[in-house]
Image 1 (cartoon, rainbow, N blue to C red):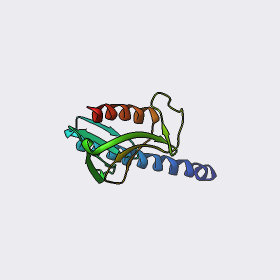
Image 2 (image 1 turned 90 degrees about the vertical axis):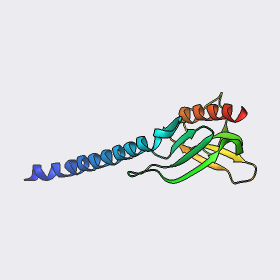
Image 3 (image 1 turned 180 degrees about the vertical axis):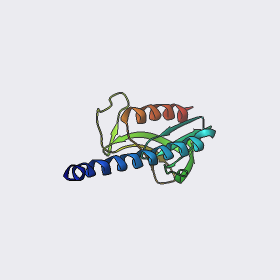
Image 4 (image 1 turned 45 degrees about the vertical axis):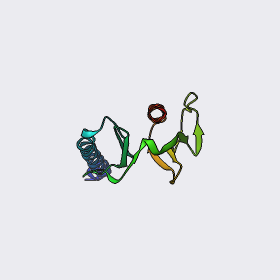
Length: 136
């Protein structure tokens, strides 16, 4: 009986891990359904983002579909910056680590939009791609 009680916390941990994995799987499947119509898209735990023609849509991933969706046109963007820990980063000199990673879109007539990322290389790739897109 004592041995059974010792294994109980481990069983609880496995159940929690299975539930967390199932939730993440459902988010990814919802993202796949949402991303079908885009030319280029990204998924991470903080945000989903899709690019179709010159329109960017982004929101937060959920099990059903992305929520808090926002859309803007690249023609309105004046500048794109990669921001790591509230510091603007040069794309040719990327840091190894950072806790808060965002792509910041500057507009002349609106507030900035910050789209969160989990990885610096992925954010830098998107920043470079989108900077080329707004310069053409």
